[in-house]
Image: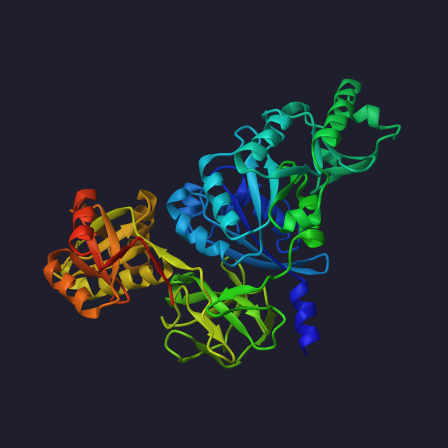
Length: 526
């Protein structure tokens, strides 16, 4: 059995796609699914009407605004491997959801707009990957448009991210003069051929007689000069350096035109790491261990609003999971139902009869599972590294109909379970306080409360700048503080005390007055 578990884990490739907004992340996701056989309509993003909706952007607000605001999971098979693709929110206001998602993957694809290079959100997400030693492969997108010089892009990746850069495809022209890419390390070119079908690529040998008909001689001379410089100045691909996070292989292409995407997919199968050991309290968990373990990195409510469902996204870390097996949640030591586990293709679902380390399994539940919960078949286990972050914007919630206060409480608790917002209930007063990282989160919250719960709300400024979780080794010292500052104390959804600071001076002063109390901007989930 252990050999089967190890072999199945080795077939898994669990990866996220990260980028700045509008770099083409969702389009690349669509094309990976197309080439992987998960969708069968060529050019899905060009379709009309309902078919135009990106598979990974299934929420109404995502479809209306053309942005990803929630993580989507998609599982498909390709090249003898099982690929688990997590499409993350690109907007910085949803960076916490992306951070949690990056705890559940073993590698990442970084998508860059060829005309813009490394943008602010790309840099932030890269730093999260670096903290977790997540290997990164880079896809430079939109070569079918005017772009920066490829050497300038490579230099920017090297200088700003402190990574060795190993191009595996090198562009031949750009924009209207884009002819394809040279395949580094060989004598073949991957030419852009719009007449070649759904995947407009044609492999041509460097000495092929028909090459001159497809690529002008001047471009070929330029390419030869550039490839000499590439080979002399840039390192060859090193699998070990890539997996250790020191080197990023680079592909140039166009997701919209489905060019360079197959090469990227083949690379993931050949070189992306299989599931790695996961850190837990007291030890790490190896994917080949026989007992099933996993952790919840996301909870999504109302994926099907008609059924008021709630699905916990579980990253499996070890063992062979089977439908109906007995698992226990570490937080409350209660059994977890696995009667109807699911695999995802965004909102579409398939029953998961069995799964292995690296797989993302959805467990429908009625609020028992929360983000950060650990599940196990045997010994109690607690996986680490999924913190809560203090919000940067705090608002009061005003409900149009006061008679529906209980409904609002339930709805806000649902949103808090998902990690959409932080929800605080002040010790003094009756107003709910919601905390978010950015304004767009408030827009999403307002839209979802109205659409999914029929609760029209407004947000008003709260007299607070930020929130800090409060702990102390001496329980009496903590109680003394909570009593003294009762008007500024709130409770989060788990009942933990939170200090609501009115400004930076207020926060500094209370830290000086109560030196034995810890005020933390993060809280480890248990």
